[in-house]
Length: 380
Image 1: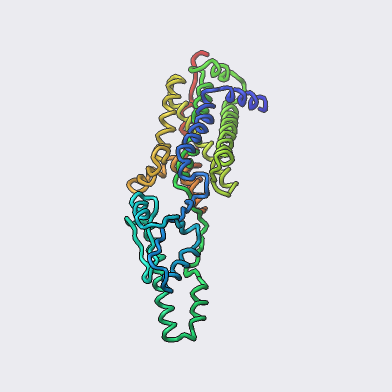
Image 2: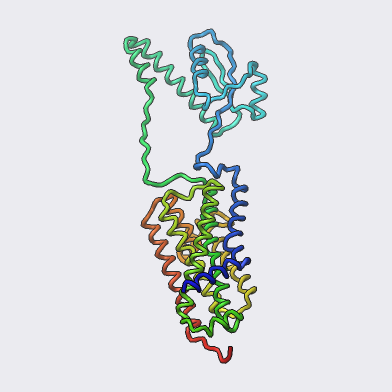
């Protein structure tokens, strides 16, 4: 048996076309994805980098106490929040505002003012800063006039900033939206094990290949040969998937989650379902090897498309209008398992995905077995 495993292992590794589609093509596609989405900060944790809001400060009248306090307030703000540009004249500031070089203009005077050219997130931040200052200044003036003895306590309370909300986690993680393409890519790569299964089934049938003739007359029991082929194919493709995962994590710097046992389990089940698809397709069809390869390309790419390989939101659209497709599409089930493992941390849903893949694999093997179990040849 070890002799058979050794030579079947060598034979499959030397099949360049099958190994290209099962390993090289997903790595090439993943590299293209990485460069296509590099501008979105794909290798980061998913948090966007904050750019300070650029503003100009025009001192119209800094002689009053409120104006000088407002100017000090602006200068003491965190530079990561507010980036005050070196613009002294109002005309230059208005020109920069119209050109989009700055977001707003603060006017330092008895009653501070703000000018913006449009509405947006940064403009809202500047408005909130000014409103917060005006409210705080009005409150302090009221306290000074009515209860001056409480002014020191009021300043202490205002300076002691406290969060009014408490951040909690249900175990999930934030993610860059582009990571979903890599989940779909790994799912597609798992299904690409079908190319290995196609080659194995072709080499096992006497009416299709000379190797199949020799294997059909060997004294080794057919079930033993099938088990050896299945073991070798799954082992090879599982190694392929580990290489792809290591490339994505270590070379491209994209996180697939911290649960290593779950990651290995998903890749193992993906390798099994991919090989089973190829074996079944090879057993039920009597087409030439080239036609089978062409058919396998379509069979692996179409489920990948439905899982979001080409259009990231496709799986969500299907889930909204026809969710049963996502339940029977092995690529979508694999992609969902990666979400449950790396993002949602939903082990119940993860277990459901693994069970679906196991049932699919058993059904595919049953179809392949019943299609060849009574196969006989008049002459070899």
